[in-house]
Length: 155
Image (cartoon, rainbow, N blue to C red; front, side, top):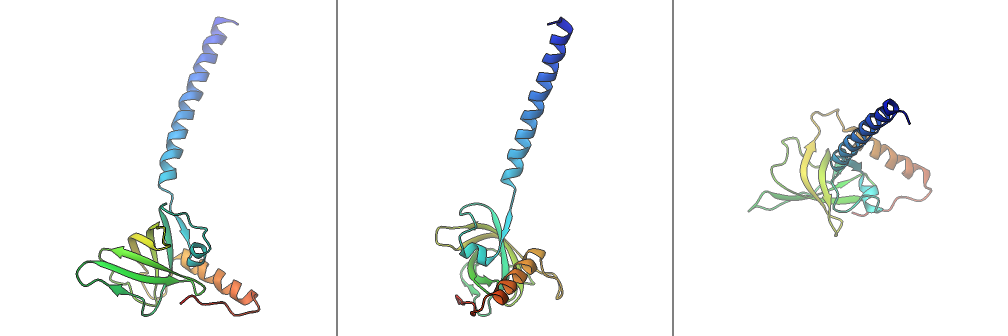
């Protein structure tokens, strides 16, 4: 092989190798920051991974909010009108957090199926609903309409 071609091949190989390493590192970094959304029905069916950062959301069930008077710990249930998931959060809830309102929580699902939230987001006005929640609620209503027998409630 001619020395000039050998040198070009070596330069191209080094460039491809460096680009591969850079792309690999970027993909690794992005993989750790992905937070997928799961509805209560998906969590109940086991689709949501345990001990991985995910987002979950739905409507806060009426009468489900339980606050610890000594700490900032609070537990509440969210539903997509088919299943419900218990969310535990330690911190100050948003001012707009209420029963019967849509929320999205970010955190991890533990072994007991309880969602341990690190952040809770509430809707910001009366007409707004997070896109993930509205889509999950539409899917739940569509699947309820397709089945001939009434959906079983877990609460």
